[in-house]
Image (cartoon, rainbow over all chains, first blue to last red):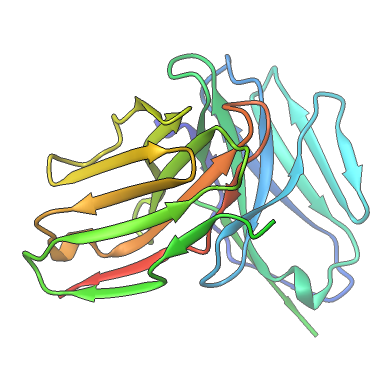
Length: 112
Length: 114
């Protein structure tokens, strides 16, 4: 079983739509959670951390459910510039301290 | 800050040749990571260093791969001999801490072995 599993998509949505991505992780000992964004042929960049109580950054809302080992990202009022691949990232405290596991990513295309 | 700097940006080489990828982490970051990204496998951690010491190299695919960090501002990933299946984008990332904060990635080296 992979450490982090994501629906690869693609998700194709119109501008202004709300879209949600989900992710599950296998190691219950994981302590840190992130969403990264990767544009085509570019490096991954940190979008936001995910906190236990849930957190919001503008149009982006991240949620964590430790009991279900489930992370979500909600994007409201989608913009063309949101088109990218979104990577779910989890750290592994259970074995090698500090190792981050990346999901394969969910591809989003926002169309006009 | 210039960010994490990788070179070269692109590398095309023939099978059997030695390839050396270079990385300069962000000043003050004490952890450095080498990743490989392919369509089939996504992002895979190859090796990481903390305070210039290799901590976990379990992701290094085989003995043809080696990595060094001679000082806090420089690291290399070497493949010798290279094979076509090594074709991928290789990212270097650095972090001020090992696990609590997210990483900053370099722009990557796109390696093609023909």
